[in-house]
Image 1 (tube, one colour):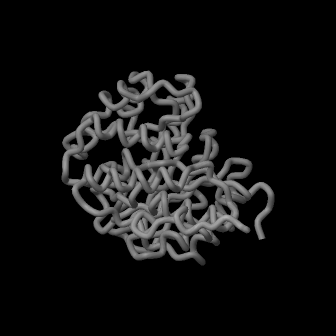
Image 2 (tube, one colour):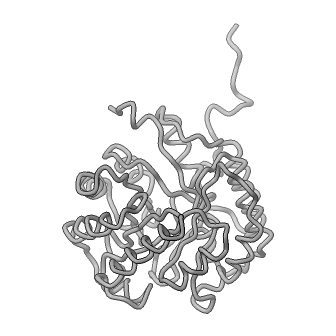
Image 3 (cartoon, helix red, strand yellow):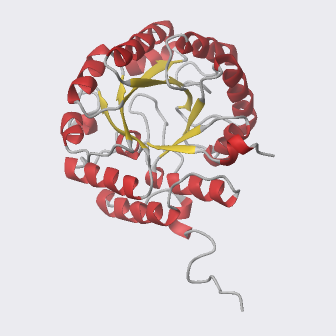
Length: 311
């Protein structure tokens, strides 16, 4: 049973960054901007547009400044830039187009070193510094705890460790804290426990979730997280996504799949399923491959052509 507060869920569209970053096909800046425009047209109000990282490490994000320069002027849309260090934060702020910085802490030393060259404890310190930097610049910042449900190098991650990290990061005053299943190993029971514990530990700050559908549990995990009180869900048009530094981290949960599940269950998202499916088909042509999203293939229900007007 959902409370009135849970009758709507916010979606953060991450396809322009997390969706594209691990793709081998180099996507022109104009196409990235077209993807962002389609997400906005579908109703997205928060979009992770790029990441400010070393282009040698993530070549797909080498045009971060150009993407920011081409963003449409929208007072009703929050543009998020992912940053891993203070240099990235400075670049994002200097762009003049980013509304919110996305900082990342990592729950394991193995992925922390691979992803950011830092231990898990060091990523907490940097995360808090980035939040403070954003606030000093008059911007907001959100924080993500990567590998919250498991690490490709270290294996199992302690729930207590994630809760401790969330408490420490919350002291810096981010807009929210996200739990990320970076390599798609979470299960609904684990998700329900951890979201509940973190929500209780950091309240009144909201919990956001970020799931990969690597092992087919992504939608079930979204449902468990929403039931446990998560207020925001990351999703990627078409179900593209992956981390260059986390082996096996394939496929974010697809925006159209999440929309279909939530809307059919009576939970509003404010996004158009029809326009999101159209964006999927357009993106498939850009990427020259079929997108993994299931609803992109099957369509919504009832299909407009099969609806009948009552006599």
